[in-house]
Amino acid sequence: MDAMPQQNPESPASPLPPEGATAVPPPPPPMRTTLRRAAFGAVAAGVLVAGALVAVPDEPHEKAAPPAPGPVARAEAAAAAGSPASLSDLTALIGDRQKWVETHPSDAPAWAALGTAYAQWGTRSADASYFTRAEQALRRSLAARPGERGNTEAWAGLGALANARNDHLAAKKWGETVRARAPKSWTAYPVLIDAYNGLGEYEAAAKATETFGTLRGGVPALARTSQMYRDQGWREDALATAREAADHAKTPAEKAGALHRLGDLAWERGEPAEALAQYDAALRTDRGHLVSRAGRARALAALDRTDEALADYRTVTAKLPQPEVVLELGELYESMGLDGDARTQYAKLRELLDRAQAAGVNESLTEARFEADHGDPEVAVELMQAEWSSLRRSAAVADALGWALHRAGRSEEAVQYAERSLESGVRDASYAYHLGVIESALGQDGPARARLEEALRTNPDFSPLGAPLAEKALESLGEPAPGGPAVVRPPSAGTAATAPPSPEPVPEKTEKAQAGPEPQASGPAGGASPKAAAS
Image (tube, rainbow, N blue to C red; front, side):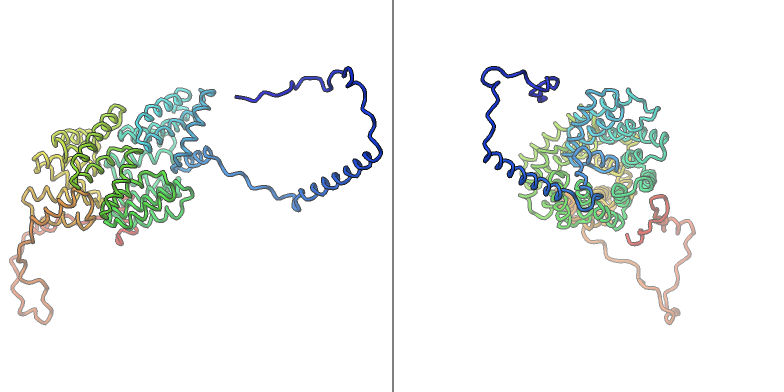
């Protein structure tokens, strides 16, 4: 409530003439009082003059430092840089834009900013209801100012919203529309990178990442480049770039994101202790970084600190009920023999999946993984075949489809998709494990043994359920059969005369068939990576 003034500002300068006893003027003060008042006035004047002299700076050109930016300004600066804002700053920005558009309903940029902030909040809080609000705000922005008249911010916001809903085809359309309209603007490229990766178009994603780094630069570009290297299997490149992003991070949100990425890379390398250290550092930087709390739980479970892992998982699933995290907690319970607790988590997962579908969010990948191992594999096959038919052909979808087909008893069909999941170069232990089990089911013991060894070498604790099964599958295959070529080394020059006779010449076609295709390494734009050899 606004404070009202105590006196009317238009009232007369002097009050009405006094009446009665108050009209008589007071008697003059005695001489002693007059002298005392004069002395006191002189002292007071001296004090005021001295204070004024002290208050004047020696150098008039010096100015006070500007005030620190508030949460709304920090969120705006993060959006302008393409970086994530802290949740508190994002909340402040949403509140500020909500109040503004109430009195300025035709402000298209304000509606676009509000819609994009809603989409971010929905992703980071796992609350799909904010996606509906985001779409409404972005449509209001386009109604006030169409995209053809320069409102590309709303188009980019719709692309980010589509990626948040896992509708990568729609995101690709919006991103390419923004790029065609404003080719020198960087805002289209984060949308395109996520869309291309979700569709399995990794070459296009790499080119978009390069362009984003040219136009934007800084920590956001380093983060995207590190992820690109990781997806292509160049671990050392991914690690070096992620460290560079952490070193150059300027805000707590940027720092926490970079440290979280370092934790993920350590986890995928099979180093849970290092992963735990990075996740802890991210949480010290931003206590509300719940994805790092989930990573911490995963690492603690691998280190057999299950009580701490369960505590972290419960915290995350209560505040950030993402379906994949709920599935992880259920599988951890199952690995510990706590079947009742596991069933509770699986029931919660089904509820989350139903809610996501009602809100227009595509969680079919997580649903297929759950159905393949804990439900109906045929349902998983239908889900992933629908994704594949809709051109969503990422390595994750290929792996899930291959595993679902195998679990449904169709290993002959499964193997091509399982092999496709590893073609991008990503070193995911679960992908290698799935392919090894499928090959073993087809009687291909040699390749199966190599894949299972690769999975356990990449990350021996990749899953509380899958890792022990991988070890058992490898043990069941046993050691490779003895034997091999009689001569394992070429003869030296001095013993050439006593070397065994050369075999009959092999036709050229057979030699090429045995040799197989020559390995090729391609960089982000089709050329060799500068660090590919080290990787």
